[in-house]
Image 1 (tube, rainbow, N blue to C red):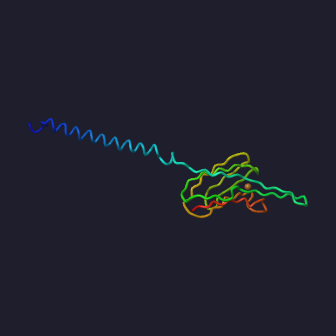
Image 2: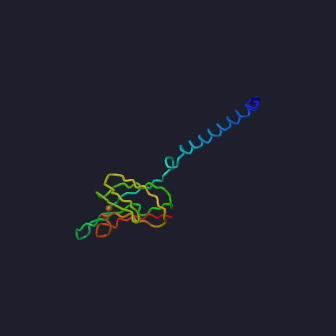
Image 3: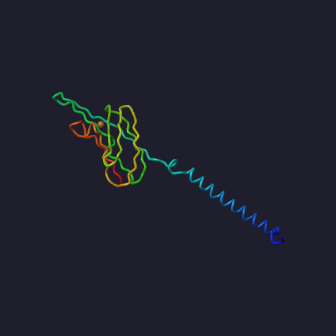
Length: 150
Ligand SMILES: [Cu+2]
């Protein structure tokens, strides 16, 4: 039965190999943990862009009032694939129901409230943010902002 008797050195060798394997596994486990902690989904910085709803008003010589609504700024620029949070403050005008052409993004900006619109575009181009209530001159618009993606 001498075959099954390990020498002390052999035992120490296998013990050392075992400890190394445990250490390597622990290192990989910790590394995986790090990846989870620094998950870009939770830690990444998302750029903020701020916009307001503005109103222009005047009274013509004939007493008729002219008013127009606008998004301000009227053009914003973001990178392709970039994540942006667009914050729109409702300053003038009661309600601005909007949509972004070519996307399924829509919402409403209410007076005295802030609306956050998360943006990320995979395709370059110019996307129009259109207020449905003030889409053209006949409806006190055009209240259209341009989102330039490149
Ligand atoms: Cu509007």
